[in-house]
Image (cartoon, rainbow, N blue to C red; front, side, top):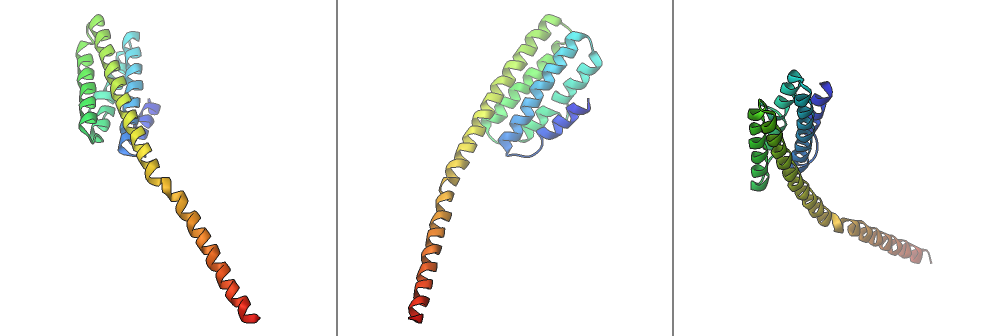
Length: 160
């Protein structure tokens, strides 16, 4: 159980908001799958622990929601939270639980896909913004070399 706690802390770690949201959602998906395995395996104590790690106060969905910055992210995470709440309520009935878990899995997959697209757009924007920075030092190096050559040339002329 310590590994799950460490993953939850990593999900709230470094990176931009889109990356941290994506990390928290990825961890929520993994933990939900583990909770589903515990549920079907009859380990109710572990199931409850894992489900709380996803949906409880300060859980992975709260982490992702706290980092949501746009309407799309907020709506996606709200949909995942609703699906998780439905799954929590449906646990008593195995058929309903499977259906509710499938909806949670689909909601997580959709939201994670949206977050990955947003992260890719952020990375592309940063790449294009930094694209010209390689040109600047090259120009400065050429100017410095020209200035040094000019300065040395003048000193040589003084000695003639």
